[in-house]
Every structure is written in structure tokens, then in C-alpha cells.
Image 1 (cartoon, rainbow, N blue to C red):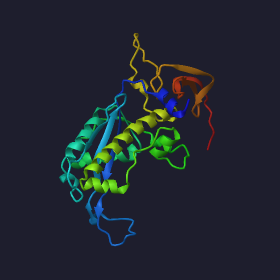
Image 2 (image 1 turned 90 degrees about the vertical axis):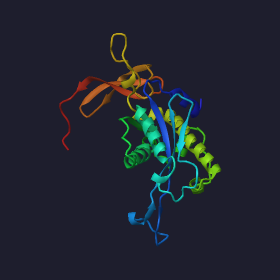
Image 3 (image 1 turned 30 degrees about the horizontal axis):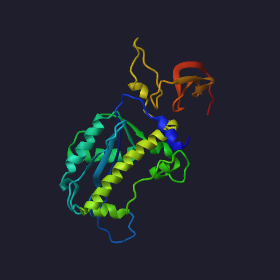
Image 4 (image 1 turned 180 degrees about the vertical axis):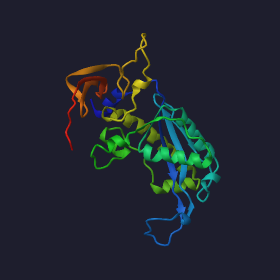
Length: 278
């Protein structure tokens, strides 16, 4: 069984609303004297960078949602004056507001911040709190030569990103070219699909996964159901002869039979009162 087949075994089982999303941005336009300029001050910026499309998908659903700025040539139009810009940002904000867990690739440092910043500029309220699962935080720990989504897909045999002509796609899109708009939609949607697939493949290696026990409910006696924190499976086993350790405490070590993630129980097996002085 190959890695791509194994990824199918790592599907989540949860009542949490899990949203995978990705945004595409237009570059800023500025004025500069030297082609080798590395920093362009705000006084030289004519039009700031902004989101031009987003795609999103609810985990377990086939539909990939998509929104973009309106048709037409918007190359030299300010974001707030671009048709459909406000509605597009509001739509993304509403999905984030509905989600319990939000998944992306470099999304904590980029996508989430950009959307929130644009909401502030437009006077749109911040979405309600959600847990973030940025799988870039997992892949950058792998020591691979590249930590991109494309490299992750290649490592697990999950296919490739949608091919395009590079920077020219963004230029043609902003000029309103219909073919560029169609390709941008395909590219953006496929990134979301592939990000979700990469999340499933990486599940055994994700150490900061939001704890799915929070959405596992209780049994007939009102006791919390125990499930894998990363995939939601209730097929768990206590690892004999080995514990989970902090500096002073040993806890019972638990392994998920489905995705092989490890967890610890809260009760203390052993505790010491001595520790090294540094």
C-alpha cells in the first residue's frame, strides 16, 4: 500500500466544522528609482496588495466554494473601489466565523492575517474564535529541501498543483482576461483540495492538531468520549511499558490504532520532587 493510499485511512471523524481555505492576492503597485530597490516606502506605494480570490471547502463535503472580485480591468483600481471586493471579503469572513477549525498552508502567518486586516479596513467585524491548523508548521519540521505544498504533495504521491504561466496569470487576471480568471479559479480551488489531502496524509505527524475530544460528546452516563485527538477514532490503546514524560511527571501513553498518533492521559503515573539545577 502506497503513501497516497495510506492517507485515505487518516480521514477525520468529528462533529467539528472544519474549513480548509486559501486566498490569492494581487501585487501592490509602486514607484521606484532603481530596479534593484529592496524596500519601497509607503509614500511610493500607489495601490496596495489585496485579496482577489478565495476558495474554501468544508471537510467531508465535495463542493469547493469560490469567490473573486468582479469582472473587468482592475489593474489600477484601488481595492476598496474594485467591484465585488467588499462582498468577497465578507463572504470569507462569514465562513471563518462559522468554522470550529480552520486549515491552511502557511495560513496562520499569511491567509488569516490578510483576511483579518482587510476586514478591519472595511469595518467588517472579526470572525468568532476558531482553532487554526496550519500544516506548514508540520512540514517545515521535516528537514526537506523545500517545505512548500508542492513538495508535500510530491512526498506523498498526491499529484501536483495546477500548472500556470507564473506571474503573468496575476497580471492577466487583473486586466480582466476571461481565460486568466478561469485558470485562477481552477488553481485556487485545486490548492484547497490538495491542502485537505495533504492534511490527511500528514495526520500521524501533526503534533499541534486541535484536540478533537472537544467535539466528541459524552456517553450514556455523561462521561466524555475518548477519541484520538487528531483523527477522532475511538480505536485507542494504552502503550504498555512506556509513558509520556514531562520534566517531573510520567503519564500513561496512548496510541491511536487508526492514524498512529500518540497522546497522553491526564492521570499521573509517577512524579518526582527533584530536578536538575541549571
